[in-house]
Length: 94
Image 1 (cartoon, rainbow, N blue to C red):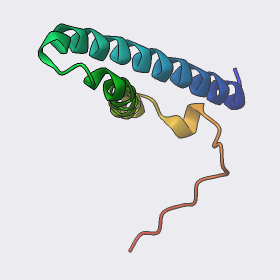
Image 2: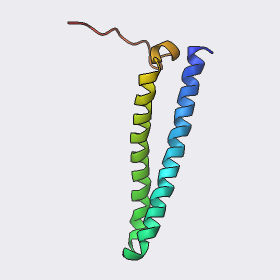
Image 3: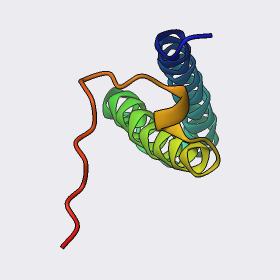
Image 4: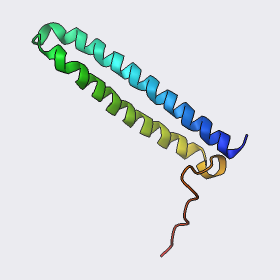
């Protein structure tokens, strides 16, 4: 496979992974909230759903970043993937 197709598949897989992780974390937070729902006032349901949604997005972002860092340690990105925004500039050595 070419570098461009590898890049496309990596981005597609990363997007699907991030959406699935967000969905799973959202469901997990909803289950946790439902366990404590009886202890909280009734008006918390109106603002807890958006808070849970944002928390799931933030948590999935951190999990995604951690996963990509682990993948980057094992895979040479420059060898297998095409740059999206252009070639990397060489780093200057002092």
